[in-house]
Length: 374
Image (cartoon, rainbow, N blue to C red; front, side):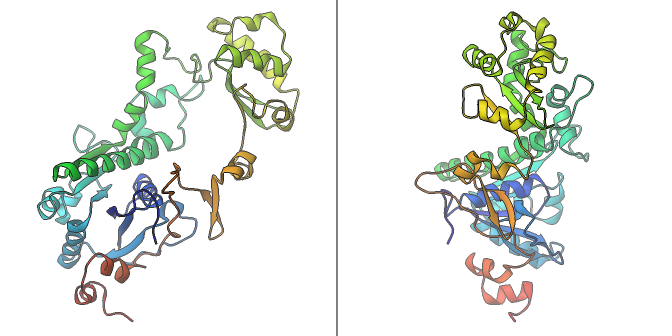
């Protein structure tokens, strides 16, 4: 039995990589019935495939007319569908939005690509780093010497999957009001640009320099950076507001009058060196004992083994274990209709019959697609 605020929402997902599965995970975690269309012959189902969790898998050969018709029948009953192929692929399969919306005028058809459905780059290959490179985001992140990719969090997951999930749900709300569906062109480059809204505002106001590590939030400020401790581990300091900055100086025992010039950019490098020397005098654990849960705006920098064990994460059950794999729990949290991990990652085709029966297919139709039940 599915649970969460999206219970009752029916979604068809065309299997992909990276941000597509993450979007499907988000929807499933909040209760949506997400049926994933996989290619026949694949395996899948490893517990470590975390972003595949909670869906039902139907394996189809989309080169056959029967499989295409089955997909269209699923779309007839769906609230939303999403895919992450290059522009034109769904049309060549006979599954494009023009065909799908004729079968289901209320359908919300989500299309996620790196560059979008139009523009000079639309048909070019790319990855997260490339998509954020043209938005200003990659240029702003890194060391003074070079831009550094922030994992694939900004393009794939932040600018892609989250904007797709947001767009799909907005489209469903609108379709339920108007009776009309629509196509969502979700480009990771667009989403990454949107995430940069505040920084474009900073630039317009004169508060942002193009050089990395010269700004308030890019590690330029001595009071907003990471520092290495005597044991080689790191802590994060974000003492921006004057009262938090004053507490930082108190907790570190710094009395140097130069630190009174908090917002004097010309002094940031020398103040960082002095603060780094102070932090280097104690271990990460010692700093946690001094600063944990205070208004310094402090947290230890934890690795992937340490993070699930941190007392705050443990108290909130931010991480859970499924089939022996530690992974993030569903987010955000709902007071009346909490989400849940609806199941472990499925083997490809594991729900051929079960899902299709639930979505209104007859036994004869299922036999024609997958063969008789064994």
